[in-house]
Amino acid sequence: MKSALQRTVQNQAAGSPQPGEPAFLVIGKIRRPHGVRGEVLMEIHTDFPERVQAGVLVYIGEQLQQHEIVSRRTHRDGLLIRFEGYTTPEAAGVLRNQWVYVRADDRPPLEEGEYYHHQILGMSVYDAGRGFIGWVREILSTGANDVLVIKNEQGIEQLIPFADDWIQEVNVPEKKLKVTILEG
Image (cartoon, rainbow, N blue to C red):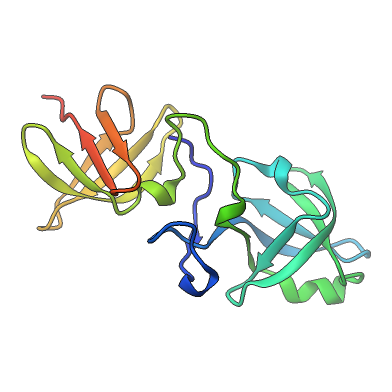
């Protein structure tokens, strides 16, 4: 499972691409102004940082204020971004500690078998032998593969690797996940 975009905002008025899907997805967080030209340092929260380019429209903060990126360059483990209308560090300072979003319908397509986290979170999980076992409540990124945190009606958690041996079917439209619980 691709951990493309970690954090989401629900905003039904913005027109979600599919029912229950977030309208906006986080791509980064603005940390602080940088330099004297109005640039800000943005930490990256997307697997597609190459799409954050001049001319791209992004939405900043809880009010989802639209901003156009004027320039972008890499800086250590983040990006230095300048937005239209921000030419001084004082002006850019108002953006400090704000989340940066893109529209969900503007996200890149994924390859077969890859999913955004928001597509998996909340799915009902079924095992062929046991039936319904709970809902996906969290996804842990471990390096080798993601691990799903499944919570049942009693609040008991179970960890299931998002790997071929465990996951039999992912049905995004129906929000159902079929798994095989291995013994041991």
